[in-house]
Length: 67
Image (cartoon, rainbow, N blue to C red; front, side, top):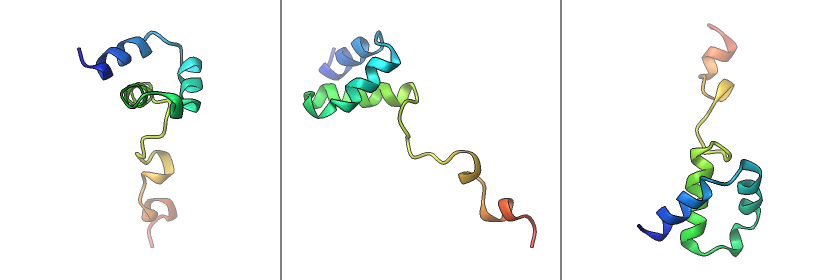
């Protein structure tokens, strides 16, 4: 198993508050551990993945209505 997969397996057993605390300390982690943490945070939707949601997903015309 790769180091990233091993770390992901470990992080999956952690609660969300612990993962968020690790996120704050990610600069102290090894690169593979940091990548695994990011993968798990995205998996659990604990970080913004850049995908627009709600009103941002709708076009400007949808918000203002027909012209």
